Image 1 (cartoon, rainbow, N blue to C red):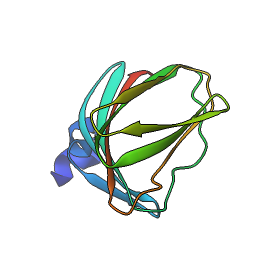
Image 2: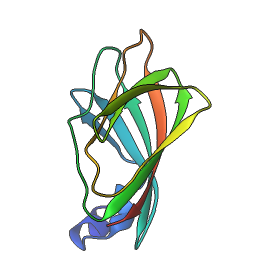
Image 3: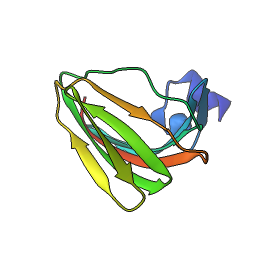
Image 4: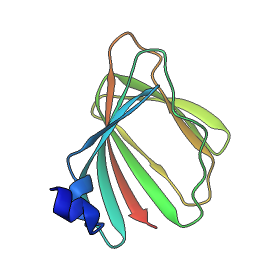
Length: 110
């Protein structure tokens, strides 16, 4: 593993969980123009407001309920539901619930 890391091999990033103050994410699969992540947002936490010029995101809630901000609109997405974030839109993911929010994120673009 260390030899791959020293060479900058991207396979070292797969299935590695990254810890943030708001929760965690794990890159499950990636290719030249896509990436799939499992995201966990702790209760009462949120990710920072983001904007990606060349990347869209599709969020599928698999556990809990998300409050989504997308291009100035706020709405809830429940377990089993999904939402699409177009490139160039300001967006944020929040967990207003009491259990961890789990989301599968599919990124398309760079």
